[in-house]
Length: 443
Image (cartoon, rainbow, N blue to C red; front, side, top):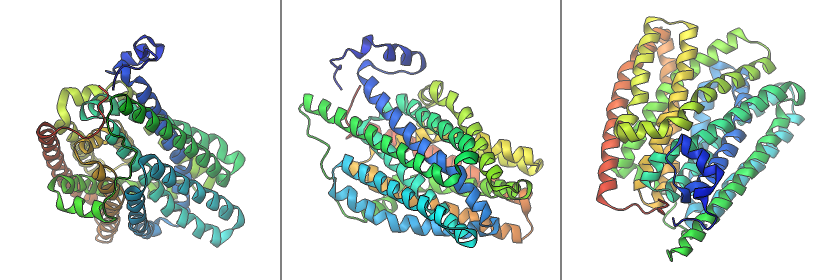
């Protein structure tokens, strides 16, 4: 990207950002719009996440595996239409269409939650639980696909951690809004807040797309706001046939299996200890707030430095190593405090380090795979891991293994995940050196 005519090297924003990250003057505006885009997305989600978790508990913890199954079905239903949008519409149009579809859904749920009571309201809550899980994975996957499309591998290593910090601040804002407003406005009204934040994300994405297309025109490069083309099922076939994409799928699968083990423990504890529905919503919001605060400092100041110092391969092994240690500790000391802190630290480690690093893996794949294969992996494969985790956790409970047995089973799974992450990082470096990336270089 050429230096901007506004002279970003002399701007206050650039001088402040330089204290935190290695950013170039001509990257500042793109970085700011990306940051605002992700902040709006995560704020919209975290407004409704505590509502979703409370509805899951209200519907019965024993029914959660079925809700996870419904989520997987929802992902499989939504992927082909999304792939069709990617194939036929320019980038910013399918991004806007996807987000506004979810905004319309939020308005429908607002009406349903206000119109139902008792058992009907519980069933609406179960549908909302499934829908919100689909919503979260799709909107975040689209965002990171966009980032991998417009930023290069080098920029991803330097900037993705700071961009992720925008999402963390959005999560803090969303959690705080729900915690402070739910007793005043009720849960349903907060869905309208989430819809408004999604519209802010659409606006930011549009500004970012126009910025990059303008800069491509200045360099006489072909426009990227053209339909990507390809088949509706191309993303699925590529994800299953490519060894590289297949191993990204394995990384995602192992991560979600272990995450589901911990999620079920949290749900069980809260259902027994907190009986008031508004209080449960507030509790989940505070847990989310804690995770986001822990995450923010690392993302803003350390993620880029960690990836630069350790490289992609070693950085991808950090969360699996933390998981192995955490599950071993849980097996030896099976207390509520250990579960809560392990959950908080693990989620923070994922958001701050593992997730931004995982997104760098997509900077070396073709544009079609950045949206189609990535969407399939981030949604269907992710929820398939939930299924394996949910039902295997239930089977281990029937077998009487409990917290200790599940924790010790998770330790070797964590080591398999660790070696998988190492292979992926090494392969990404080989692919980056073998061919130039297709995304616009802004450095």
